[in-house]
Image 1: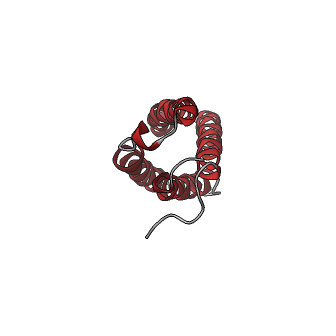
Image 2: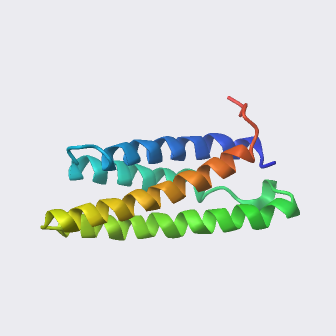
Length: 126
């Protein structure tokens, strides 16, 4: 089980991911709102998730946590690239393809966050 201090950070990241997923799957896609949500995602990830260290982890948890963090970081960076491609898309088919790729990336990120949340206590300190 991961320390309580990890729980709230990952819950906050998950909330932003769910918001972004909702924006991506909306009938009327708002690129500006999506970019704003992505910036919020990036900020929370760098300030609250990347700042967590392995000092509070047992040796058995370090590999699990580091691999999840690596995948989240990689996918967040890939998401930035996909958002750039989405902005430059001019044809409906291209836009739909980019939205689909972004949606799959968000699904991956949500799964990683949920796994990390499931590994941490449900009642973080206030």
